[in-house]
Image (cartoon, rainbow, N blue to C red; front, side, top):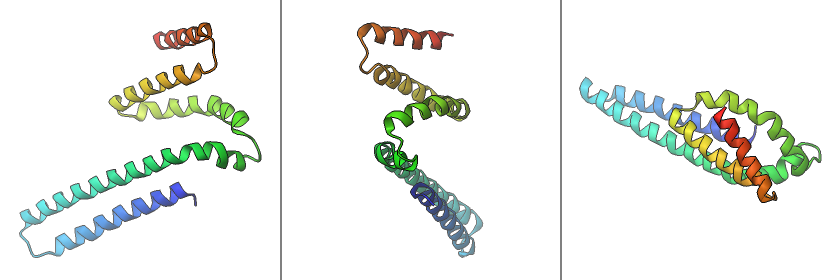
Length: 148
């Protein structure tokens, strides 16, 4: 099992276990029903907040690990292929399909922010080592695609 799968499984197990233990403890505590429901509601909010914090932490760690993954781990896994000859092909073939599936599932505000950020990165990093004329042509093609 990979690190990310282990972390995800642990995080999910922790959250589910905490919720079950909390629910049992609250339901068996000698309090009036309204007070018990209120306490259960408050504790559920706490667990949801912890889950969000855990998700944020895992996302942060994954982002920190990405450069190492792209530069050393993935080429090793792909039998000697280098980042220079493997990643461009993977990006070209896989990224459009991933985006086709994932973008409609994102909340609108998140989707707008993601597309805006990606467009900026594509224009900036996609034009690396290009002449000014080539950069202008790239931006024109991106703009043309967006207007279509």
